[in-house]
Image 1: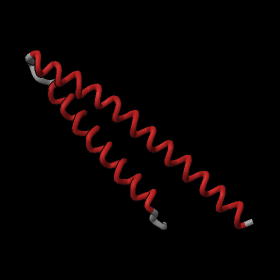
Image 2 (image 1 turned 45 degrees about the horizontal axis):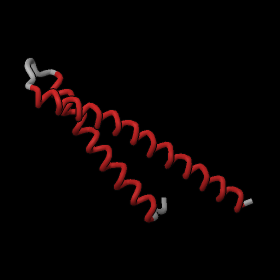
Image 3 (image 1 turned 135 degrees about the vertical axis):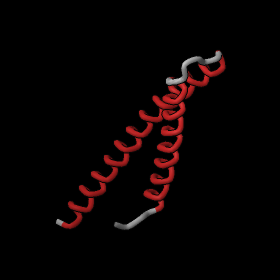
Length: 82
């Protein structure tokens, strides 16, 4: 597989989003299992849950966009070979 600047940028963005999403999801789970939360912790829980949900949507968006680009490049290279 030939690595291009575009694929390197995709990997960098994808893993950054993945790490931030995992951290916020872990924070949400940890806070959700606490017996008593202060009002500040409730605010952090709501924010981390929202960040988790946005991160999951972003991951699926990144993957679908990358898949569409890969399919388009394969079609283009397949038509050039014929």
